[in-house]
Length: 404
Image (cartoon, rainbow, N blue to C red; front, top):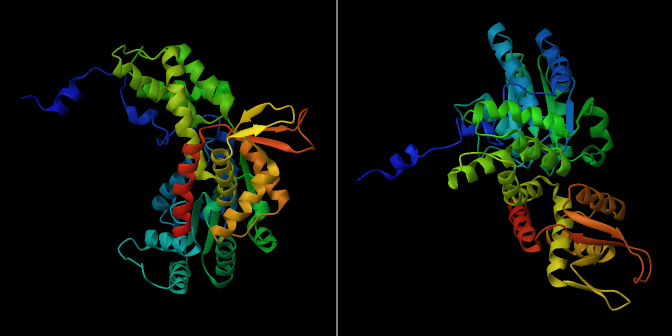
């Protein structure tokens, strides 16, 4: 009997190398990020001359190439210093997986001492060991902290790094902080900002033409020749640009459309298949986006989802009803209760309004000012997606963060 995997391997497909059209693939060439690559290279070049480079903080929405750009530059730096035998080390930490000062330091230390396991050692031991490595080897350590806003005690982490540089006589600790949250810096302690935020870079979303060129480059390597129509590339680019300027969205649309082409045995990626792929990709992107939101913003969105399910109908003075519409004030009250439940500090009403504006910008909620048929002036808020799914995704994130 023929092996079922043999049979699968023999099936026809539009893909040449599916990994290249995956949103997790980091391409060697990064179109439209040449300026950012150059700025980042210049910022880090001090280590080549045995000096401490400035800390760099990078902001931008999901899918704007922040992580790919940083990893590309750091890999190039690693290649250069290895060749020149310079004492420069880089440590990449995904702060979503390591959301505390201790976990960040532990992850960095493990990358410097891969043969040792420091789990169970005290926070002070891990910190001192990190400084010791830099001092003894006269090493410059570049800490790439991705999704830095996910670190709960981020001010403590930044203060320790700043203090550490005062203690290291030869060598240094440098931070490249990456955040999807454009207002992250404003929430830092003023002393942290003044001592660490030395240089900033903002990655703007891609436009439709840029996304089209990025996709064309990927298509050449990911798909078999003549399997993807130009209209499909144009539509995927236009949808992604309209939604968020997110390159990952554009890539996922083509990947999913290719999977549909294989499943239906049409073996041609068309604009019609991109349209079919849009529904599932949108949902996946939204659920993925939720996981990148700051915890306080997750709590605000959770309050909206919870209230949407509890009070599904809103009645105007005229007697008209509308499903899932909420008052801004009642959401804020629900948020305060949730923050207390999760033992989190509460944000002010000013920051609450800022979070609502950002959630609207991400397309997660719809916001309108109250008008005819409603007493008083307020903002009416409605979820942009299925409340059950958003609530379930947020519970997964919040309870995970709560246990951390």
